[in-house]
Image 1 (cartoon, one colour):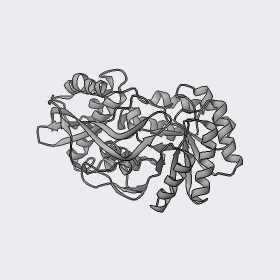
Image 2 (image 1 turned 45 degrees about the horizontal axis):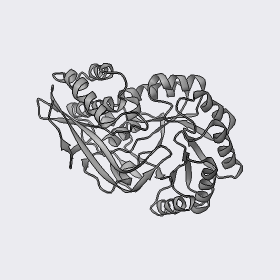
Image 3 (image 1 turned 90 degrees about the horizontal axis):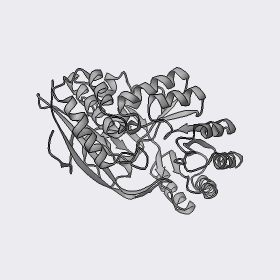
Image 4 (image 1 turned 135 degrees about the vertical axis):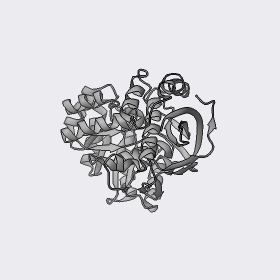
Length: 365
């Protein structure tokens, strides 16, 4: 089975309500969709959302990377030669991890379809069901408490609380939400780089002293401030999760060697796809450090890929794959299915994605 063509398209999915973090606000999930076609009529799908505030990747950068650098290098390649194709994608240009991830995901999808197996099984997994947390968008403490109560009433038992725009208000947010949902609900806080190290230590110690029972705090300080991240990790009892501080396996090695965080959040758009994510998993497992699997604001295409990876590696123990739940509609036929917080992988080959509605396809390459 050989690659004969690649086409790109745009997809935009409205959210049920605006999604706010310390870094940005959005009311839609925009995505660049890649379709890799073969001489046997089989297609593989991938996705790259433009998250300039996080990855630095814009729509134009992603489309140019895939269209002018990645696609020409993949045409004519055999689908079975996955490792070589992934290496070609990685070496095609510097950076642009989202564009690389889109191609990586589509190549893995085709690889599964070539051998007639779901991706998680090809990667060594056996389980195909797990529960995700649910993200509470950044708003006033009272509004966030109401959103948290609503999520709990719908059956979610783990909530990720967006904080980071003001550490004093953040402390009130966490206390108000804990009071609203009771002690049985798992709470996680995500500061999205919004605090200084001193603010982070003060806020986290407040949560500990107040008995708010917050399981972990994600990326409390700026992504480049590894020294500050380690200072926070060493100063508090709460688990510190590195997110934006870890893109590449090299980043993971630095965090792990310094023990600058207690856990690592893996996102395909940061790691350049499944190939890079597997390398991070291997490093973390060797160091005895657990990982979370997460996502940007993405459609079910790339979230399905992340779900397959999560079921293939035991070092991934926490799951934050709720973006499709936050969407007002689902244009993706096939892939992972949602029933409340429970996600179930399809046993169809590859990612199990059959088609994607509403894509505005551009000229094929």
